[in-house]
Length: 221
Image (cartoon, rainbow, N blue to C red):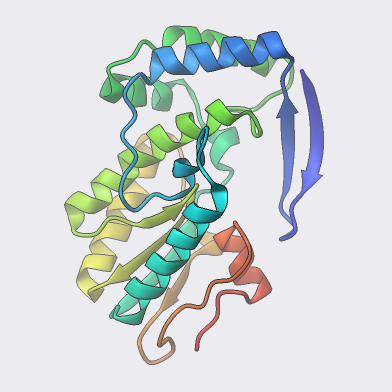
């Protein structure tokens, strides 16, 4: 296993993990045992870029959905999860595995070995981590949907766009659900747009929604 410090184009710093072939196989097998049935929500887009899927197609679908929903929204809230992958712990994995009908213990044992090597939470970089994150974040998505509105999500970046009351209820439910699985909203990244300041969202060229905000790629029009 190799850990490498990486800085994204938006300035976010992460530790990327590169696994040896035998480690990668063991990790993938443990994730399959924990999450044998993973349902990707209709408004979660990055998870559609799994094996054999085109990243660009999912990204364009996300752009179109953001543009369509924001153009007719009474209120828009943009946010993300603070240190998402490094913050994922055993309780969240057990909850996700229970919903997926899987066995989490082999995965927890694998993550304990990674932790001994310096990895916090789940490793950033290996493809199976995206499915672990998706399973956990889908719990918060569902709570928001039950409250009135599922978020439009790319990995851990979310947009709530719609009726004012529904957006407020859903965003609050999402934040509570994050807490229940041991995660928290990154309040410093939270942005609220009302019709008087936003006629629509324009999105081009960056996979991180938080990065788009900081760089002005997402802007009022």
